[in-house]
Length: 183
Image (tube, rainbow, N blue to C red; front, side, top):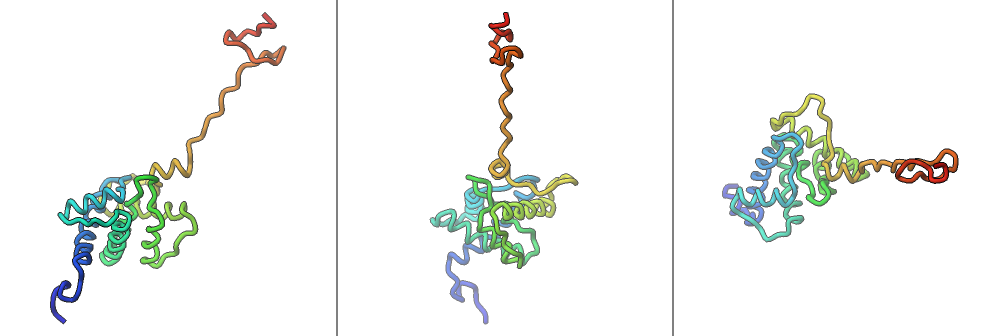
């Protein structure tokens, strides 16, 4: 059978999604070139539209899921690391449940918890950095994004210092540090 994809019934959107996916792979490889880097869904869409000169009026979440689905398959076909692990929500720093498609496509089990998913994505990001030429420390370990890390492991609140108390009367000492009853 001969002819172009358009001759075979491919829609303009299907043609564009291929073009956008190729641009997304290039953008994500660039992002992965810097250790610890990641990109938001909206930033990726903007960069892809700028690079290709073509855009859509589709909402970013709907567009991103279709785009990243194609990126997932492109990465598998080209034996690239899971570049979609670099795309996170600007709000909370997570890859979200859409990342499960990466795991399904590569024949891996979908994790039971969001934290497990984010840890798998962190490991995939580390692999992306290594394979895309980032200067990765030899002892580097997978890291959650800073926003998600704070959510999962909030900074420890230090307990307030106990106020000094009079040893004789058991009452809190004034600012002078001398008990009014003892003075």
